[in-house]
Amino acid sequence: MKLHADMPSPLNTVTAYGPDWIEINRRRFEGAVVVMPEGEVAAWSAQRFDALSEADFEGLLALSPELVLLGTGDRQRFPHPRLTAALAAAGIGVDVMSTHAACRTYNILMAEGRRVLAALLPGEA
Image (cartoon, rainbow, N blue to C red; front, side):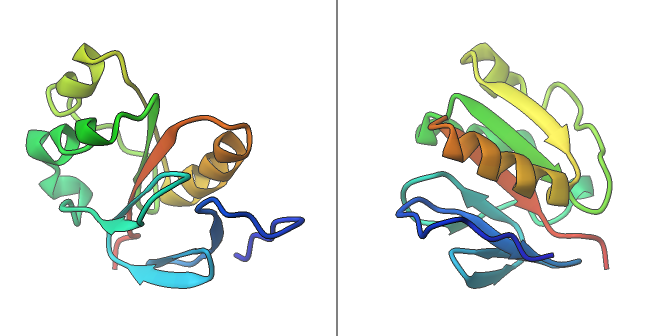
């Protein structure tokens, strides 16, 4: 699905997505990524939902988001609370949804000026 902004933005925007890829600022990424409105789009150490670890989420703390959107692939799946405990302890909310829903939600929150972080896992092959 292609997503189009009304006007070009200097902020990182999800511009399209497919079954196993995400396009940010018209640049295609395969594999898991972490994106915030500003800064570099980075590969995320997590690659599959079943392999998520506490360290994958602890690594997001240094980016100081106010909210983390976790895109869990093709369908919404909830990680064990112990995995996101470090974020909760820091007062950072975590919303879990499919990766495609997380892409759309990220664009809305980013456009509102929120310091949102999207941690996006690819769809299952």
